[in-house]
Length: 196
Image (tube, rainbow, N blue to C red):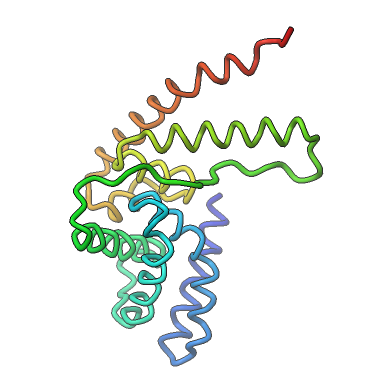
């Protein structure tokens, strides 16, 4: 995992450097690398209705602001901070104090190969259960789950992105996992019971 993080950091640094030297095609490397994860993060904060437009807005702002990136933090942390700010601006513009649940988060990947139809059905049911459980989380807990478990950011990075103390991040992750466990455990136990 650490090697993957280091490779991503090298790729990002190279692409940012090339962009700053005038190679606008290097921007495509960054968009391709982060478009799905930024979309998922934006969707976790705003819901599906605003996610597409606001994800595009994030990358427009990245293009316009990349020259101001100072490398005080990693590019991915800077990017998620910018995405968070775009979401805040959107929420203010919409006058929304509280957003509804997200849609279509895909936290689980099916294994490689061809699973049986029953296995595919069970996996889809589990994805739906996890999506519903994540949707039921308060927005603050939903955001830390997306960043920590799906985007694999460290607590320190999440703290910077969400502008909250690292201890608060740890507490929210703990509480979110506890809530997910409580909500999902009965379904998992039921799934393990033999059918008559």
